[in-house]
Image (tube, rainbow, N blue to C red; front, side, top):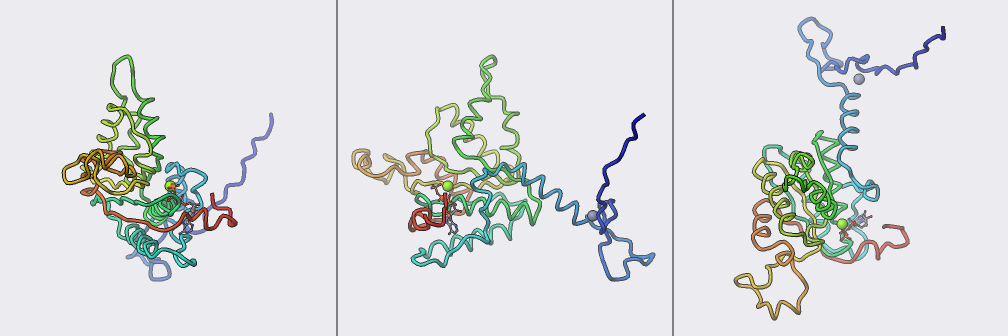
Length: 266
Ligand SMILES: Nc1ncnc2c1ncn2[C@@H]1O[C@H](COP(=O)(O)OP(=O)(O)OP(=O)(O)O)[C@@H](O)[C@H]1O
Ligand SMILES: [Mg+2]
Ligand SMILES: [Zn+2]
């Protein structure tokens, strides 16, 4: 009979594989009276790796971190430093009982997705927060796929992680306009998350202005000549809801990809 050889298992030197270590290393932790233990670093690291994998951050944004977001290059717009500070504080002060999110607004290539992913990674690595990244177009596809023609309803079970992850990044809100029933599901997701105190971080290219025809805004005729606004893309009702749900962060300035083309930013 062939011998079964076990692969050598590396045992964590801190906890000996139990997953628990002394809470007060170096002190009188070994005394009979003080046997408090805490989760070992090896378990925390493993959990962070699992959360990171579950967050589905696209490969091309894997490099994005708050610490790699530069704000002091020549010609950097002052709004970048303010946005970076807001993002860093947001990650630091994250409170799972408070669902207030961020609405990151800015033109192409100003670093919106970088900041959003940076926050997500920070929350995963330092606080073990369950997180999820979704491109808006991908989410719409997912909603469409979840539609069950036989029973004419959306199978919300498939979308459970989108409803339930503690933090959700929704990248490029408004990039496409969904059909009415798909939009109903998007609204349901955003409203449910907010009511459940779950944090949503949204990025968008569209200027935070009212929809054409909204009271107090331009007439539709005048509006036709101006660029589309966030209000045009998601409706006034949702735009106002987002203001209630999120702090607004605005990024101005040039496209980072153009500016640092030689540095091969995609
Ligand atoms: N201030 C910055 N410091 C370091 N890297 C940056 C900065 N701003 C942008 N980048 C990098 O430039 C690239 C484009 O940034 P990003 O994708 O975040 O922009 P965006 O505003 O989301 O653009 P889009 O509107 O096209 O989605 C990324 O690779 C990102 O890491
Ligand atoms: Mg982006
Ligand atoms: Zn260990």
